[in-house]
Image (cartoon, rainbow, N blue to C red; front, side, top):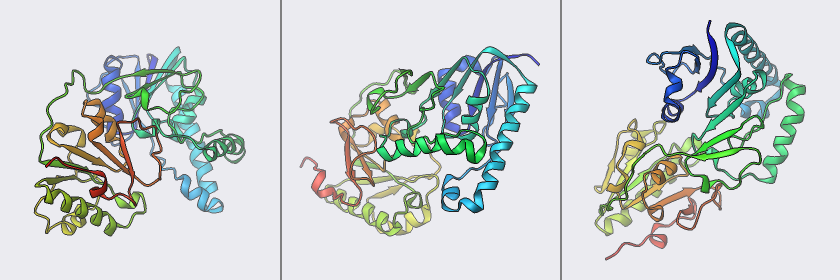
Length: 342
């Protein structure tokens, strides 16, 4: 077995996309080891590859029913430690070992960072979790994690509200550094763009894009979601405009279709269509429910003032500059906040 200089962790299709964008040479290097989830195909790469075990941790379950889930959770932690020990015995890791990954919320990644001797650890932006504000409550929970997890699980685990906060991380690649509420001391921050050579283009009037959302993620009444979309469609209809809805892949599209069936100015796209592949400049406004699509829209140089974010907290959980618009979803009334030229 040859020496391993680089480890790449791929847990989602987006991880594969963004890490390939930044470090393409590493994927076809004989001294690279890719650790990947079963849903990720890596057959095209000429390097060492190993599929990871799916552990399916649920912090919510253990906090809700600690007596029931504490023992199974501890067993999973021990299994991860054994898996990493096996990796360490199988491969010859360099003393200048690098790690490229995206999620330090992932328990396997957290333990790997602590068990192997890395020379450099690079975390890469995978979404809005890299930008959220931290409250006093978050800091208190983080301290409790550091104290209690070694006792409960025989391994220190980290509470990660804002991604890329583990102390082992050296470099963080972000798509928009200026959206970061605060930079952590000791980390080098670098900005990158997934969409190179973008140009500001003329906005086409007549259509408004709405990135919809699976209401079950937010415990939001599905009827209220339909009502919100109907109200927006009604207002747009008065101004001779269409509402184009991009469903989330996890959303009940049938419920969406039935709830908006009578609206002639509503177009519903395919649920499995990638939002990042849409031409944002075809739309004069873009709505989203605090989605990571914000980062891609901004990266495309689409005007920030035309990007409208709806969320559940009264204030946005990340830094919004003066151009980005944020409204509480429970209080949003389109006729009070959006005006079209007559």
